Structures are given as structure tokens and as C-alpha cells.
Length: 75
Image (tube, rainbow, N blue to C red; front, top):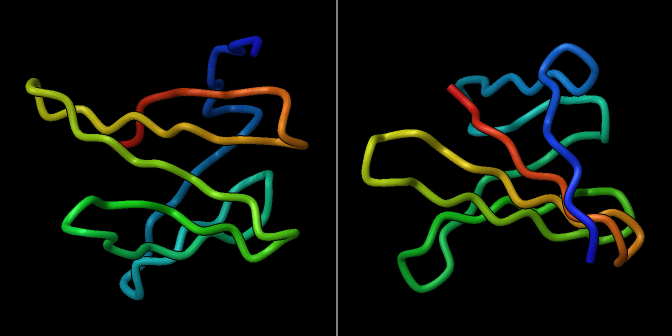
């Protein structure tokens, strides 16, 4: 699996009041699975994993086509 640095300028992510994320890869919906925050993409059922680090930063793990993993911080 290759990792590609997340670029907020080419793949903007915005969290709105309904816990929905809109970005360059489509619309994502926030959900909790066993207390773990995750994102679920409404296009082709791709899953997003959101993890909060000890410093408070959020890291998105985005699977595209089952091959490329993109990670980045979300404010």
C-alpha cells in the first residue's frame, strides 16, 4: 500500500454541522463504531477511518480503489 501526503489545497475537507464532510473525493458521513470515530463515504462504499492523536490532531485514512491510502490532518 502506498501512502500519499494529504494536501488540503487539492483535497479540501470541511466538517459541517451535520457531521458531514465534503471534499474532493465526495461526501463523507461521520459515524461511531464501537466508540471509534469513522468516516463512511457515500460513493462506492469506501471507508474512512478518523483517528485522533495525543496532540489533538485528527488523521484521515482514506482508501481509494482499495490501493492508495491517503492520510492527513483535519482541523
